[in-house]
Image (cartoon, rainbow, N blue to C red):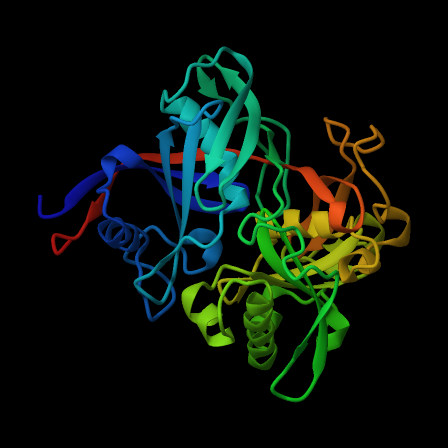
Length: 398
């Protein structure tokens, strides 16, 4: 054998796929780990396809996860997420992955990292990227996480067993504050002379939101159409980098662009309107509460990065914010939504995000006003499945 074997599991979580590793199977040195991760996924690839690895050429398919039993009180496992850059030998740890979060609990159970009984399991997970905790609830049968079921999510064919994710106290995941700029709205000046209103919020991950109309968009564009608009993508990166400085994530726009393509995330939003989906069907305006198109690692996302969607759901609770104004009038959260009126199993009202793959419901419990506003939790639902287990093979040069 001329290649090195490293134990790994290939999993789908929500609308993402990633390679899962046990921390004990990896070197402690971050640089050596990154070499393993890049070789595993197939980066860098100037062709953008990652054919020589497990990646798929887009951000949602270019991910790694490291799991270990936690020594923290009240926590079952620690979860570290790495976004492998497609065209560079680089792993970005600046954000977490909400979609792959749904696979963390099932992975931990199936790998025997904690003891559970059949029925509903609840796994408490500490995310090292954000210093935040989430709870994962799913069904267990014969000691293993159940994968079959009738629950469906936009962007994933077929159905599976539902995984409920509750992100606890998610505000300030990177910046320490729900409103990093201390304001509901800010302005950034573009190189073409335009001044654009933005809304900067940090809940599960820092995000900057822009009204689609301010960039000549509708937030109904398919990803391919946005990819063809290099001028729009350049403007979005310019806005993202400037907002990152406003949020305290870097000293200059250039530093933001260089240090992290994942944080902050950037999204364009608009009031609900009919939109054509990736499968060719139409999502009617009355089946969503807000339209959104989000950029992930410089590429238009095929659905929505789940942490970005969770941040949007929290921002919708902030009266007079750009996000709140864009929501359907009769669905704008005006108060603490944890009143039993929603359709979430824990009583949380769900906001339906109109994405290129369909409507994604996400709920947030927000209380207080002004400087006292707090996010108790954000709830969403995914499916997850173990796809392959064994070893990844790494070139001998590593």
